[in-house]
Length: 273
Image (cartoon, rainbow, N blue to C red; front, side, top):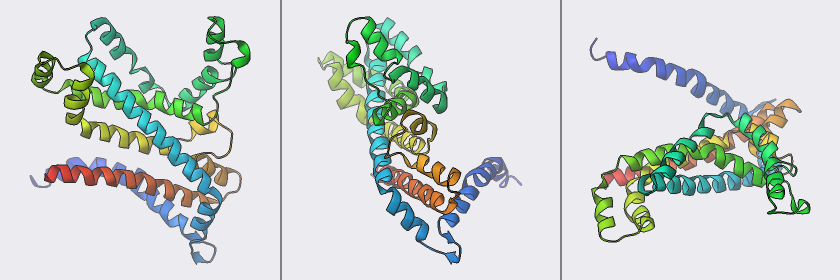
């Protein structure tokens, strides 16, 4: 009984993962190869034939957003760790977490009112005299998707990165400061290498999360190309084509799996060394 106790503790978590992730994933993968006459590759062929541009658009948008999230998380975490203005550090540490508790659909709706042509951002710039009214333009396109993704996911990544930086032994940082090293050199040469694994975890989780978001591209940009999640929703709601939608979902899962596999492989190499 003692040997079974750890497995009994894990059973509820495994049951939830199996029921709400593994089982639906299995049905989705099976549906991607399901046709009227039996197993077929027609769904995958249709998915790549019709939506290859959307696939490329999705990967570019998510990759660009992930890169900006990484840069922002390192910058904010670095200032929280190395910043000398205590007031600024306290204000930043209190403010950067706010978007963490906002759902994606609320973030998308808020951004529609902020970065639209007559949104709060343009009206504020015009009101304070930094921009004439005729220069106002809408960011409700691919740029708006990137801005929303970065604004929403940056607090999550920063929380992981800043926590790892705060847990570092400050002896090395203080020694570098005594030797005259600047904050940027300390951040890039001492702090960042020690939290690189945490940064990668935050970026992988952010990449996978953004690959699955429907509300942001649906509400921010109505242009073509669009992201795979919007294409999947359109195939189901407008055409009832679950086969092609499952194929698109499989492609998105494979893209996310490749990113996760690359990170796991790199982590295994570092552990082996």
